[in-house]
Length: 221
Image 1 (cartoon, rainbow, N blue to C red):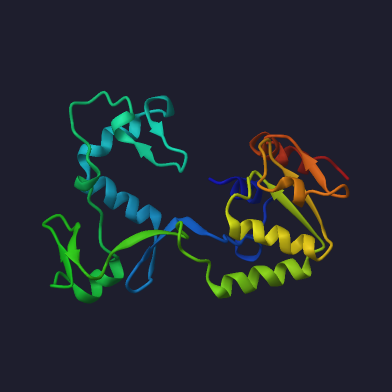
Image 2: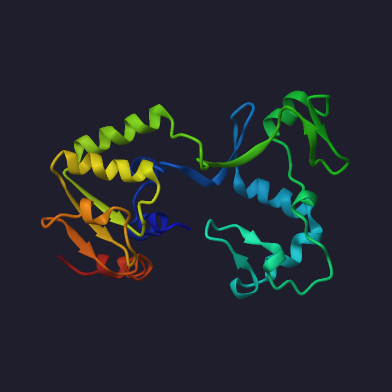
């Protein structure tokens, strides 16, 4: 669960009304052909079924897995106590359920005997997030800009603002003469030009703060 989601669950906010995921969500996958979205839980169940040899990796802890800076796992550098070879090209995934229902097993959507995507031009899925090189939709940008225009302050929690689309939101806020508050223990990109004397800068770990939010809600005003 991301820091933002922990905050929302802690303060009991209605996600449908108050939560906008600018760069998408890992809770869903999206089809590159028909753009239908499928809950990640359904896809995860299929991934486990289609890749039984990979199941032992689920029991490994963080110390045994070599994590790259982008969050990917480097299998060759990890401490895998197994004789099995885990090559990414052997990993199988299901096709888009909507495309499978529409096209079946055909020349444009090929599946193997277990139902895994094998080839074709449709049914390819990916996490419903904006990857490097992709762009946030114009509709999403306009929605967020409208929220900024209607806001008088911005609270920034647990981010380095390294992604330019996120940094642009803060710059827009500052260009309108509005205050920001930054809560993170790490350095924020271009912090010296973003955080001014009338802003608030808190050098605490956001995870340490968020876990106490529910406690502060119990304190009477």
